[in-house]
Every structure is written in C-alpha cells, then in structure tokens.
Image (cartoon, rainbow, N blue to C red; front, side, top):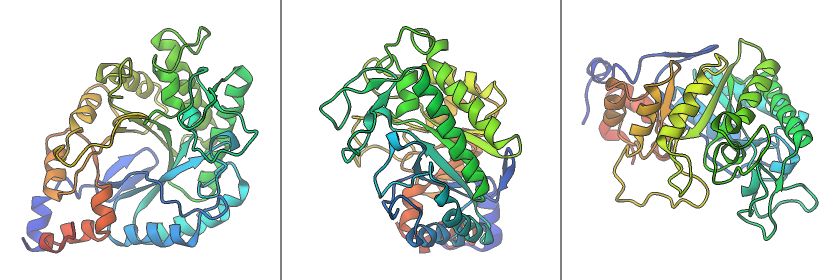
Length: 347
C-alpha cells in the first residue's frame, strides 16, 4: 500500500508526534529497544556499533537504546560485552552519539548487572553476586548473597557508569531491571530470601532499586534523563505478577527521579514466545502500568506493523512502541512509514 506523505501524516498522527522525556524530546514514537549485538571489541564499542546505530538514525527512528552495558567487572568482563565501568569507553561513544544525533535520533545507554544469570564465560575469581545465595543460571556454584559493602560498591558502579554515559554524549541512561537480572532478583520473592532491610516485605525488596535510582540521579543531575526497564510479568511460579509490577512501577515513578518506564516480559528460563503468539501480545502489561504512573511508558512484543503501532498509541496503551525486530529487518521503516511507502517496508 502506497499513500502520499500528506495522507501518511494523518494516518500515523500519533506515531509521528514528538514526545518529551525528561531532558530530551524524541521526534517520533518508534523505539529500538536494547538487544545484544556482540559487536564489542575487547570490551569497547566498535566501528560496527557506529555503523549499526547510525543506520537506524538515518532510517528515521526516534529513540535508540543501546545493548546492555556492564557497570562492574563482576557483571560483564567478557570482551564482547561493552564495559561501561571503564573510562576508555567514553571517547568511542562520543563518536557514536555525535553521529546518531547528526541524523536526528536520540540515544540512551542501558546499564546492567546480570547477578546470578552471569554468562558462562565469567572470568575466574570474580564474585558471583545476587540478592541471595541462589543457584546460578550458567554455573555449578551458587551465587553469593551481596552484603552491605557489595551493594554500596555496585550502586557506585552504576552511578559512575551513568556519569560516563553523560560525558560520552548520551541523552539518558536506562537501568536494566527486567528479564531476571540483578535488579529483578532483588524485587522477586523467587530469588530474594533475605532477612535484612533488602528482603522480606515488598517495601524492603524495592529498597535496592530505589537506592540505585537515587545514586544514578545524584551522579547525572536533574537535566539528564533516567529510565528503567522492567518485566510486566515474570511468567514464573512465585515470580512477579502484573499486580506486583504495577505497585513497583508506581512506587518508583512517585520518586520524581525517573523519566520513563520501558515494559517488557519474562525472566531467565522463560521460553521465547513461539510464532503463534499474536502481534502485540504483551501490550496489556504496559497499558496496566501506564494507568498507575504519570511518566511515559514503552511497550514491546512482536510489533512489526506501523498500523498496529499507531493503534496502540491512539488507544493510549503506551507512549512509545518498541519495533526492534522490524527495525532490524528494515532500518528505513520509520522513513518509509512517514513517507507513505508502506508497501516498500521489508518484513
């Protein structure tokens, strides 16, 4: 289907409406969410990263979120993982953010610690940290329950990494609190069996991420955007439910220190949805969280059709739509949609 640009503007009026998120405004509501590329070279962003992300910016996307970046050696010392705990990541990132901005897109760096779901290539001798002493996903040993000193060290690791991302020219940072990684290990009763101030009640289990947001905000100031990615449902026995995550999201947003919430699904060990799962199957989770917060909410989940993305926005189910796989297949999808060239989109 081909239409004129004028018709497309009317057909996709929500999709191409700018959105303000804290310190920056995106040109449209199309989002490329964080996904691992394995393009890092010796732990640093590479020329392949630059070419990859710039192709998205040239294609007209609104917001790019980088792959997950390690904030501490205990959570990402492999050479194919970007090591945001190193000062020498700043200069290569400056080149990347400048090139992305030149083409009109905004860019956010995702900061991450895997906790007990550390990759199998973990460097010998590094601590295997988690909220509790629980079996590790890829190791025969159990994770080490973080003590107060470990927690403070990691909070400072996140804060220092966020400051580096600001210096490198990013528009914001996103804290990875989904998919069973460390932040979620503190939130969930399935993995958090602590009896101190970080365990037990829901208020206590939220404490770690509250302190994390405080530390990051203090490091970057009020004029730099901070978001978080959470799972709207872990889909696990004794895991976090949609009602749990509504309460968590509401508590975090009420701090006034977050600029957006990106809602995904699942945790470690949850199967990838098979092909018969319908498009936009998990938008209801983002919509539920949007009901209880007053900051922008992102949705994801097999959304490849711009018409479906427009429908989601028109129905006020989310404020931005993750179209990552569609954008991977055709980086020009935003431009083609805006220009009414829908029949030219590659799926």
